[in-house]
Amino acid sequence: METSEKSAEEIKKNIQEYKALGPKAWWAAKTKKKKISFILSLVLVAVAITCLFLIIFSRQVFGNDIADTIIGPENENGFIAIGKWFQDQTNLTKIVNTLVTMIVSFLIAYVITLIVRLSTFKGKKARTVGSLIKSFVKWLTILIDIFTILSIWGVDVTTLLASVGVLTLIIGLGCQSLINDVISGLFLVLDESFSVGDIVVIDGFRGTIKEIGLKSTKIIDAGGNIKSISNSAISTVVNLTEELSVAICDCDISYNEDIDNVEGIIKANLNKMKKAIPAIKDCSYVGITSLADSGVTLRFIAHCTEDNRYQVVRDMNKWIYKLFTDNNILIPYNQIVVNPPDPMPAKKNANPTVQASSSSTPDNK
Image (cartoon, rainbow, N blue to C red; front, side, top):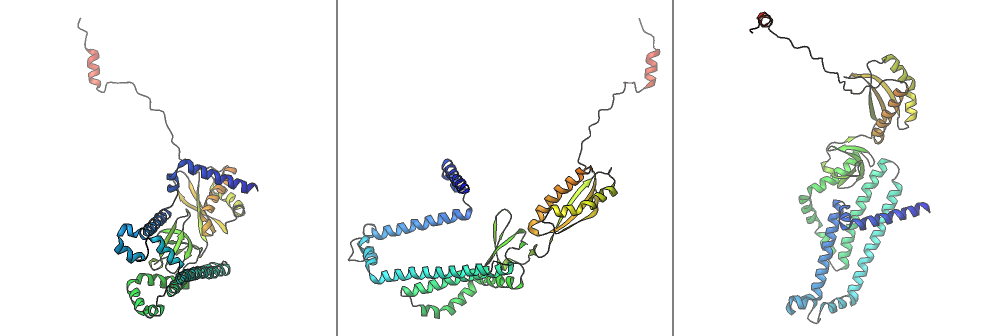
């Protein structure tokens, strides 16, 4: 109850903040994709309202000649024409059959997708195959709906299907990239180059495979940014999940430290680091990697999964720092030493002959 009350309070606060900031904040909070879809939906609604207005008031806008063609000569206005169209049992049956077809196909596709999700949630390979099946089911449902709805409204589907061969040739010539994407997607799955959930680097973009479709592959990075790449454009892939990744931690010690003593302390406590950081599979101290300007650089290596690599490096830095400070091992850092200025010497004449002659000359009084 407390959590639900807190969430309700948070929602109320967010609503109040949006109201206080106004519509600008609401628009700024939307992503670019959401902005485009919102604008397109507004345009479609405006076009639909305009068309409906022109049909209803076609006699007033276009005149009787054009209005007779649009709503019929027997109808005085568009309201009567629309009412008669819906009263026609044939049209009403077509509308009902269209809605039933869409609902049934949606339910069938939803059930198939649900079964695929439940049967392919274990393992990366299963999720990859499931992603392809869901994409195939979606496009197949759309195609079946199109042909079924066209047949309901009296379109000769057999003639349309007979011309599929010519249409396929045209599509094959004009959509070669689409066919390449589909074929490349199938080969990516068959070759097991990567699977859903793998961390990969493609075209310099590092992220986790979110979805593998028939046309494109979606990758999401650590910041939540999603990049969609055409399957045919994927030429080289660096799969970071196939093997354990290496987490490297370098730490400096002072030149005044006894290196044998420091290495003895490290080896005695190295197993404790593995227990303190559960994400580490195994770790080791490999020795001195460089002699830096202000200290001796020691290197530690740990093996872990790729999704934990950066956090393991941060945890290792903290653990090694605490190990060194607890054992009074000096960690050098850049220092600026300011010396006092040199003392100024007494001023002397640089030419001794001039000094001697000036002292031997008598005063003229």
